[in-house]
Image 1 (cartoon, helix red, strand yellow):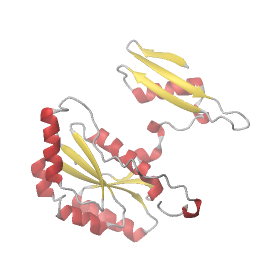
Image 2 (tube, helix red, strand yellow):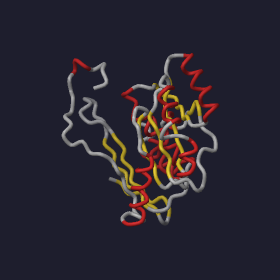
Image 3 (tube, helix red, strand yellow):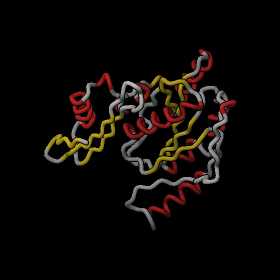
Image 4 (cartoon, helix red, strand yellow):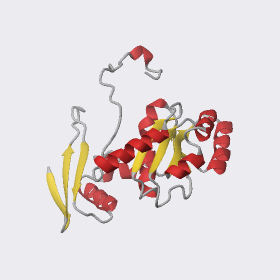
Length: 230
């Protein structure tokens, strides 16, 4: 464990594990940054490179290409007075699902009154027609974020991280972020009502996460189904 002072107000704790020749230990890099850093990304990379060199370490989140390599990037989506953004995990080929959302709980007029923005997040597929249709759809609705990773079930983490990074970069004044899927019907009025209640009476100044915890779900490790979703 090393403690490196980056400036007068900030410290970084770095924990490094080497990799042995017999592959018994895999190296890793964990970082904890305290205080107010300017150009945090550059400082982290500078310290990392000075210790071990960038070639021998796994990529840090700031270096991962899919975070910023957007094929479709919605313009001027968020406004300073927005209350919430709902980002939806979507598949490029599911245009009918996206249209159903736009015509029901995601209707632009309804969301406009509630100060909510809608963002469909997806990767890429090896189908030129589908990709072209997504571009046409995006030009019409300006609510699609498409990033350069394969749109598969196993890449849901990439989809979520790309969405959250985009929101953090482009929607600075958003109070809440809601994640859902393109096959989910949301009672958006109840969501807003509950969040307003929490703002007034419980968590006005706190950061929190709301979700449904499924604690009885068993972990599925059936190797025969490796190619399937579960």
